[in-house]
Image (cartoon, rainbow over all chains, first blue to last red):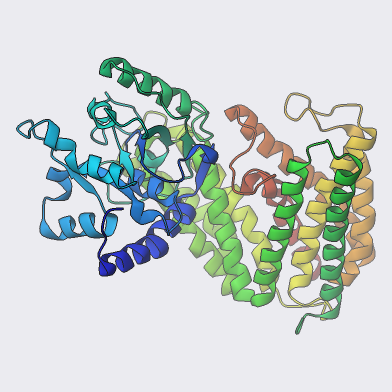
Length: 219
Length: 310
């Protein structure tokens, strides 16, 4: 397990117990489908579509408070480490694994920290789209996840479709408007040799999962 | 139990007796047919225990807490409505102001400001919400978006808030206390749902509106109507300030109104091609699935009572 300082742990528990969970379960409200497919412990990767900052909060809230510190969102270093306050909060309270998006970073070391977390038995949250994009649309999936899985047979990758969070708090908006949101958890995705085929399969699965959302059928 | 007026206390005992009967029947069924899957029935009855337990704690805590609790129910219902109907991304701020109407509406109730309570949503919210939408300026789909928002606020906030106002009315039947009329309304409304269901199961043959609700039959409706009318008449003088004959009339229109509320929300779901409006209450679906009839019975009962006795 990755090491967490006692003070950070207390703050983390308070933040998730008193703010995030009430916000997610009362302010928003989740329709969760196939909860039984959620991997109870690591090493595991949750791959979801990304439309809102709330996505991470919702996925972390699926786990009990005792497990929250083992759930680690992989997040863009240039965004979340942009200033010192945000960086401290993201690293210590949320517990992100920063990922450098710039091309200059050397390929292999890019995922070093992710691999270390997986080896320690953590659960990683990844958004293969890379950024939040247009509300309620799945953009192109990046291949990073494929590299992440390479040579790690024990790691299961669970695709999760989220819907409604881009309505509740879209990109570039500060006002949260309450909506019930759907969380549809898929079967673990079998690894493939070809990264392109793998990402295509993942996109296909996410789109299939989205079809079973309650709050989407009206469209 | 401390300080619960006698008649309401008996009503609460009666409700728990019904719950125990339901649970016992379920266990007996399971015992008789061990191979059959009763998961949904079990979830339904378990949820009933939770709903009635939470409701009673809130009702008995204090008038203000009970009013706030129904405000919270309005919030859950409105949220569920906005989540299932198609909304435009541009309407986020319009819907935000629709939510703001909830605490205000329930504040008017808590302060017993009847005049404001009755005009606030039909006049002020009705006229001002479109203005917020105009400021955003998205005219494509404007009519549908505003129609949806207004309808949602009327059903989930205005209509539902009448339940809470029953508790702000001065107590006339001291033996029932402030919770008497609320218990009466909630009990008769849910009892009607159950009676129509049971009569329909026993005798149902002729469908009323197969396109909307294939399980609703004339036999279920009439059986429920007669049972509920009869029971309402006898219970009314006990829990409310209505006389027995006034209670019969109340029961008759509550049975019809409950039926209408049920099929109206069914039509909404059918239009959206969904079965349940949410997953909040195991075995029941969403909150709208549970309060659909109450949305219709609450305002009708409130105004009937108020016209006759206040």
